Image (cartoon, rainbow, N blue to C red; front, side):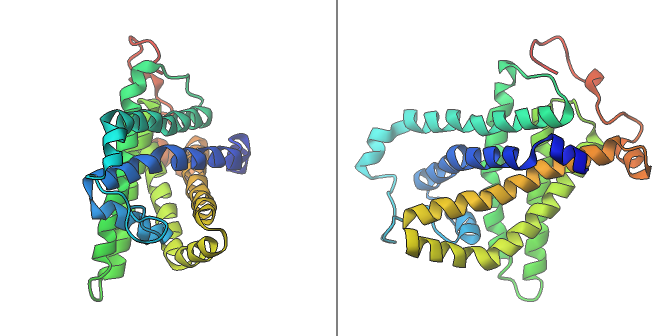
Length: 267
């Protein structure tokens, strides 16, 4: 596992991924919040980072869909945000390619990038539901953790499945998703306790720059878990011990023969 973590250059890859989440995924989420007025999206971000993305710096409320500035922004601007948002999926594809020794993918995988962007962005309102579940008496908090784990499991089984295009066996994908989900659930639980205070202090001292630095730092922690879980799972799956045999099952961990090579650019 240590060899795999060193080989993947974990912290460099995680910082790159965190920057892509901040510059590519968050704008899509925030734009969706402002256009749709979907409070679950804002609640999901507020629950984790301690600030409402729909609010202005002074807390007087953000732009509304009826604001004249939205006419200038328009559908074309939103489309450009979505297209640029796929850079996150492309970066994650390259990371998985490095971990699993996959050949590079072509433009015929562009639809996969769009779907992955949508899946990751939708995880925010789904996690906002967990915030509502947590308000239930007695069973609220444990149930909320189960909901969060289920959301992360869905996201991080489907995402590598789409981006690896059948290069990785099903058992390894499920193991990667479960390990990632467990790490992110625990990290998010800790963040719910400490991050709002850190965000409040950073904003008081540095203004909006404090929010930026705090958010990127926390996204770096998320990215370390995402990249590290994939590297650790690969090490376990390729090991000759009992865990490796269970993870591989009847198929090898890498199953390129299951892919369609008739399409150029497919692994």
